[in-house]
Image (cartoon, rainbow, N blue to C red; front, side, top):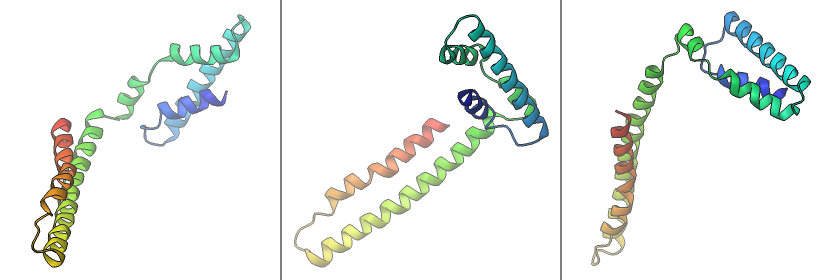
Length: 136
């Protein structure tokens, strides 16, 4: 029945901690265990009974709405993290490219080669930019 407890914990992970959450989790877990025992009595194997009980239960979107867990808040946080990742990648790429330019002109000023690794490094901020656009 550890699988049931893990499943219930996963379902309720986004809901803020509190007495109401603990009570509802306990009730859901008891109902699922009861359903599993009922299915076992009808002749199902334990693993099959657990999986069927989980599938029959579904998700807890109503509970999440009741607790005020909103998907748009998660998307806003993800979008903000994407902006931070874009800024980090721009600064990081700039520093790496500056290092290549320095090494190129300090050690081999007669050959201009820093352009080649620059193209490879620019994929990082470009990827972060497209992730930001997709998050919008």
